[in-house]
Length: 413
Ligand SMILES: *Cc1c(COP(=O)(O)O)cnc(C)c1O
Image 1 (cartoon, rainbow, N blue to C red):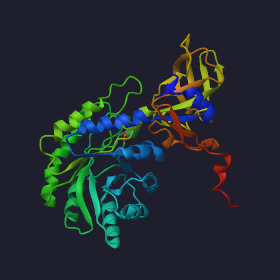
Image 2: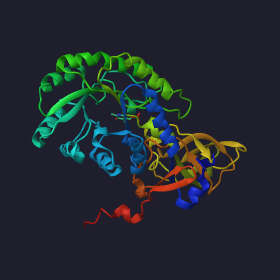
Image 3: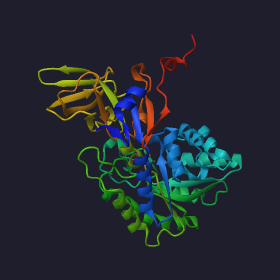
Image 4: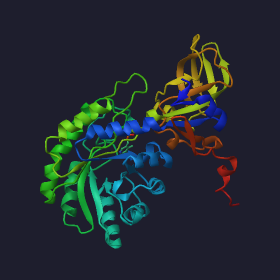
């Protein structure tokens, strides 16, 4: 690999330094448009899961294409505001919304937001109370926990009864009865999100069928038709040798289940993060040192778990390639960062050119989702810069943090 779109990686490293996140605008846009076109003719709203990549320039690119946003915090709502996202295209997910966050969302740009995806009876009570006090109506979808095994990593599985997410069936119907005549809280939909990096359609098919069966039951209890069926995050992507469904397979499934008239006056909402942005990003890093042991070679790079946590957190695989090197003879190496943790690795036993040496560049692929957004300042490492590439142009969309910024909030003693 040498380029992103028409821009040389080497030139970006020289200009902006490393480690560096680089995103392809074209890739991001293509994923969104493929998904959006695939859902037609079903009425739909695709809300990008901001937690996957929360840079406001990324949000702006998607916003311009008509994307909505799925948020999980007040901070993400603030980012939407900065990116100019209309309230009617924002859904608010998450099990621990605070009073302040709910108030912010109810008053967001005067209009409020499209939907609170509520996850507990306590949250519903607070939503109603705060909306009443503000003389507003909180539009709500109930997040249903269907008790389905998404067959993904346990840390990103969310649809099992033992997971903390969503409402169980009896809680859902308790909620419907309690709030059906509320003047300040209106239940308009149902939502499910059973997990992330799902690589087979069958658990999704099961979940969607449950939603389809629930819809008339909801409507019967409420006495009016639903307007939102929120089907959760997107399908997974290929990091290694997974064989995830294509975007078209995924949208075909949705059309097959809901394209038979059962949608009524409702629209489909999706909340994909990874599916839209993962493939659009690479993390570019320079080799600091090479260490050769009897049984092990280590490649120490300037990127670490602070930039890309997924390998340390989930033992996730990201393909790592040498930039601009012919694959001469290959050697197995562990690619590790400078952070003082044994969990700080980017890849284990990777076949990389044995000629790789100090100063060479490596690219860690498919890092556009849950990369920068999960980064930290651990070991007092300044957060890295981000660049958005479009054709021949590269734009700095986040500056590299400075040492001064590391301590600027700490004036005290
Ligand atoms: C994280 C999350 C998503 C996005 O998941 P992806 O696998 O990145 O598509 C969508 N909805 C909710 C509620 C989430 O928590």
